[in-house]
Image (cartoon, rainbow, N blue to C red; front, top):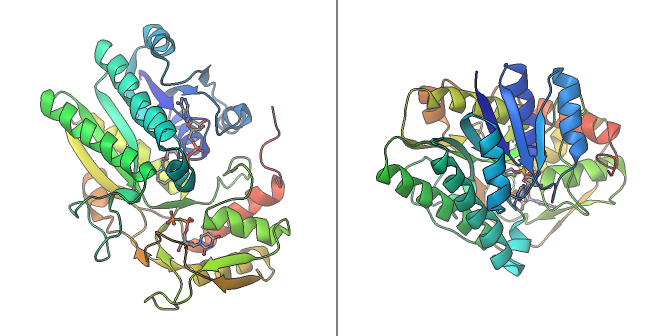
Length: 339
Ligand code: NAD
Ligand code: UDP
């Protein structure tokens, strides 16, 4: 099999996907500037899989560096994770997000075009649905944005649709992730956010560990079954396996198609707190505070298109997500060792 380039392969979802790819016999080449990740993640993926990974520390916005990488390898496809992803930061620094995510993708696509690599799997997000009118969310729902991070995802999706319209030899899987959580069952790779986590799951595991005093639940008065926000949490290993299914699909020349990758089940914040308490065997202290501006009450998906076209569905339940996140957190209380 030819090589696959993985941008952002040292990151949270990228490292889990590299592991599944390496285990399935794919020759994995990673490009990552390590702006939000550690080289140690790639080393651990090599350790777990027993396979070597070619790693380039480079910025995808650097045209010359990207050209050198494409000259050295013959890629069959690209899996594109590299991007900045913090919603709050994107509001404060929109230009940084537009440059890194959008310009970076243009540079990448131009290198692909020059080298006639026309197969792409792209990390999109449920954020492209904005605040959906109803649930479950289907791929044909209207798209909109509520912050600059979301805008980068929607612009990139639109760019890729235009690219496919310009030349139907392009094949692009737009994977719209719902809420990725958990870690590989080995406890060796997982999510390692800088500073105080903004997302629910890494925040809860820090509370369970005792490094944060309590969880603040953003809103207890949503029109949901227990008043707290509902999301579609998906185990990161299921998500990684979804990328393998998408890579296989590219071989059929499917064109440019969007897929929801979620479980199809909604889980409230309180249900997540209870599941994590079961996993770690201790109570998670919490208090209910004001809603977080911009949060939707309920976002979960209909994943049936992915099942039908890709033969993929999420297998791991909420207890597995919590048990695996907790194992990672316990084994690595401070995340990866600093390089
Ligand atoms: P992450 O930050 O852990 O991984 C992103 C990786 O890209 C990091 O290793 C970072 O160093 C690298 N990177 C960023 N900009 C780069 C650049 N210009 N050049 C080279 N490398 C660069 O994030 P993640 O959670 O693994 O997310 C991966 C992708 O999935 C992102 O595009 C993100 O927007 C998308 N996504 C994530 C979530 C989520 O909740 N984690 C949800 C939906 C979509
Ligand atoms: N949430 C919370 N406290 C936190 C972080 C998140 O109550 O410290 C809630 C949030 O309001 C939402 C859910 O948990 O209902 C998931 O939030 P997250 O930021 O993880 O994902 P997203 O908002 O992107 O779906």
